[in-house]
Length: 382
Image 1 (cartoon, rainbow, N blue to C red):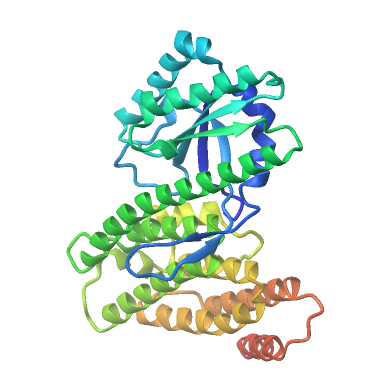
Image 2 (cartoon, rainbow, N blue to C red; image 1 turned 180 degrees about the vertical axis):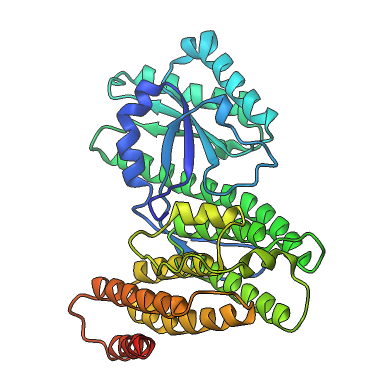
């Protein structure tokens, strides 16, 4: 999941963009930018990156699309045409592109007017500057920041460097605006779902996938701590439901988890995202052990990315102990020794993964928490 990047579509002169593609994707994340979110939350420093893909009207998201990670967030039109070409074909092409965006209520776009390496004649440079003015007049209205000139981008000159700097500043700012717009709407819908958690028909696993999408987005933006918070909230919510169930409260979606245990495979931390296990969770087909394995694997994946293997070992004790308690609370039938086998296998997996992500580092916390895991596994062998 950590390899995912925000999707940006590109249209217009694709041969031109291809010549600049690597410069764009390499330059965008070089400088950090401040992401200021709503609700009084502290700003975050992020290094934005993007996956640039060819524009296709068929992949434009609907306004109501309920995804954060896989949707195209932003749209760029690239042109280096002169005024004559703009009047003959360029204007109509941009108009068609904009019409497709407006039909989906998409306000997140930028038009880039490029002056190429062959623009040595001053009148040609002036012509392209005039094209930019015409584009602003024809398409940008009061949003003149939606058109920017990229001056001789392949030259190693100060004017080119300044032009690139302004381009990246503008693109980062507009990308963050797009993220905020989608995220605010998504979180509003998520809160509405969460508030209905005590209503008949509400399903935790359906909600889990919704909030996990938010975690995926934070992870995509490099905000690992914020992503981890989403999983911790989901963890705490699940704990509360199990406690309520054990106290006699009816929790219908928990019923499938109380089925007899037929698989006690231990935790696997070999990959940061187990898509097969996630699909089971999404379809409400995961057993308690499988669900707990998936949730903890996602938490540890983020901890490892943040260099906190000691915390993964520390959290493992609660994960193992609480899951055993939940097996009893849900009165899950299991063959004798099955749960102990799961504990031992999971302990060994955590220890192996923690050692892999903590090579040769002397850390008292790491030693303490891994020792506790060894001791817990030893007791289960008896």
